[in-house]
Image 1 (spheres, rainbow, N blue to C red):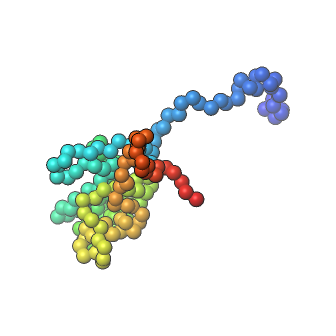
Image 2: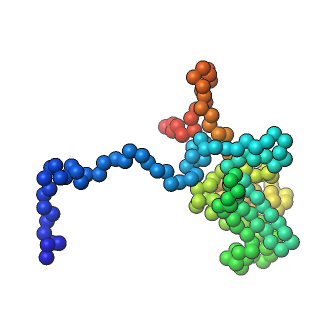
Image 3: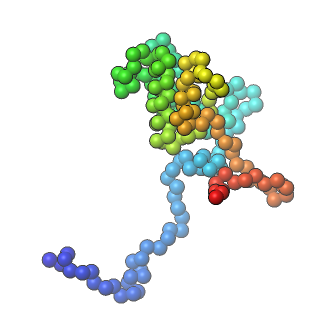
Length: 176
């Protein structure tokens, strides 16, 4: 019946030893945090490469005669997110897996997955439409932007030299 008794007072010296001290080193287990504050390595690629490699995340959209697939690719080659009309959970709600409605709903699903995983900015080879969408691809990109995914990435922060007169604002600085 000792678990109902109040805890015994520890001597001050022992209480100090058991107190949690702050760690000397902090291990960051989130691989995307440096990309969020724009200080992660961003490969520049080669000047004459046709699809450039100056990105952290890139959106790829593939359309076949039966399905539409979209995935986000990291510059390392890893694919963190994918969505396709081949998936039964998406396919069972669609009349056709390649029409405009399929593109719009696939964009909604991909945008939701992107926001849940913390990827809010990515590069896409196609520019989002400025007016009403004319093609299925334009509709896909317009819905992606409407749901909170940006199709441009910020530039990598370069630490200025002490001799430079202009100092860029740090991306992690907050303003009230």
